[in-house]
Length: 223
Image (cartoon, rainbow, N blue to C red; front, side, top):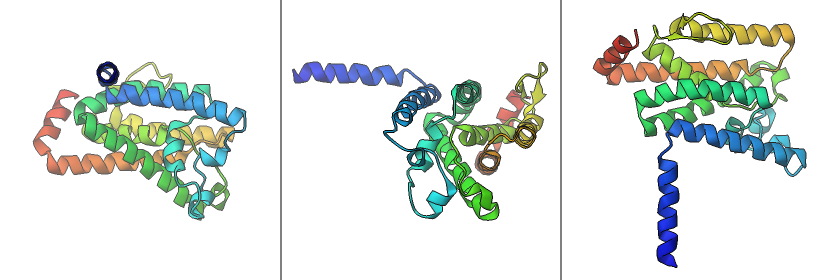
């Protein structure tokens, strides 16, 4: 029986190893979205225990929401847009960084984005009671990194039918989302997006200092 279990465990492990880190992140996001939605619908858990809220964090409560908020989304369109973007952007970044480095950077970008969102509540008191969820912070970290590593990479943004260089597309997306949130009074985590972008630029600068020749080759490849 023990031998059968060992074979089953190995098959299951190999099954998940066949997926890239980025694919696994997308699957985890989808599973968490369904799970958290069910738990919230039946009031098994509260939104405070999943979404990040500056007032809670500054009060030393629900600290685990730094992680759970990264894997929860506000609705179908929210998770669809994020996962579609992550599929394209994350796949490229993982190929550049490698699996382990990519996973660490993804999580750290999301963490830094959440930290900036929390501390923004000290500057904008109205944001103290705001909730934030989604992979956008980590996603903008990946975008910021590509903006630094592959500035001339042509990408398609939203519904624009022509490619735009990454060095223009990245800040352009921030501005567009900010305008949408202001004009439509839509609660978009612009501070978290900005934090993610900063983390990507900083990490890109670090990689430039450590691997200058590799960075030149990457930029040449995607120019």
